[in-house]
Image (cartoon, rainbow, N blue to C red; front, side):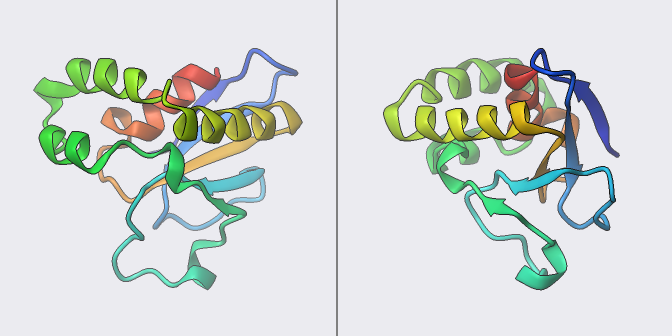
Length: 126
């Protein structure tokens, strides 16, 4: 399900959606924030503006989390720490710039978008 959030910038929306959902006219910039390309999806069908892999959690963190909802608070804390690393911080800054320019839709292949890195990013950008 889509989750609309408001950015503190110019009032532009930061949304979180599954990359498998059809693109919408109000998506604005569509950015995939997963490190691994979504299974069974072609680049054409994804309708991406960017693939920002550098902002994704480390492989170790992603595997530890395993999308276990009971680990989400700890995942969010560990991921927030990772986002201060230079490469990830630069990628987060690129997302922040996109959010300031207009609507931004963060895309993930994860089924539970509310407990994903995309949700963490949207909260940081909002």
